Length: 241
Image 1 (cartoon, rainbow, N blue to C red):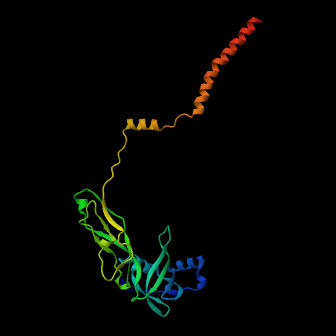
Image 2: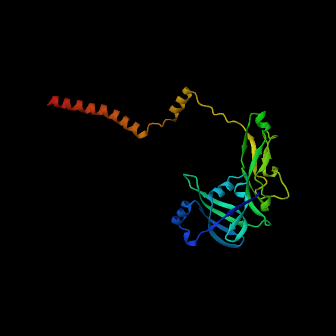
């Protein structure tokens, strides 16, 4: 989706690509960015994080096509990569790509399921979405915000695939057409063992006593009578003396 928003950049020297320099850029209220593409050299710049945030949180998100001003040049661009600070969640860095409106490009677009499936309403099933985005190829101005898939007639035993998504002459699907998108699944019941059964199972599962221990006990028990007999023999010998 194209927008009329203009993102103005400020130059960032090559030597400013250090961590300390990046911190200073963020402390000033802007964030580091890099602009590349269109067979031109990459240019380090800074941008307004609030403006980039508005684009990322728009309906078309990172697929938004906007005007980008770099020095005295203005071109169409898209956000191709971005980094967030893991704790505060603030933007830290942005990659911007120059694009040509007359050249097709590949992007990932979310798949949105619409309607309540018949398998959920009358069969007690659960709708499961296996594929949440698809890769397509089209002109920048034809990129959709999302691709809607009607699941109203979906019942048990049916699988909706990429081939079932709405197709048009403006969009070419790159994702395999046989990839499953959604189906109806059943609720799996977990059967818990009764306390008595659980006790039996636990006893059965308990490890057997090692053979060496049993053998040791047996030898001890057998050795005891022998020791007693020897002791008694010793007493008799003493008596004879």
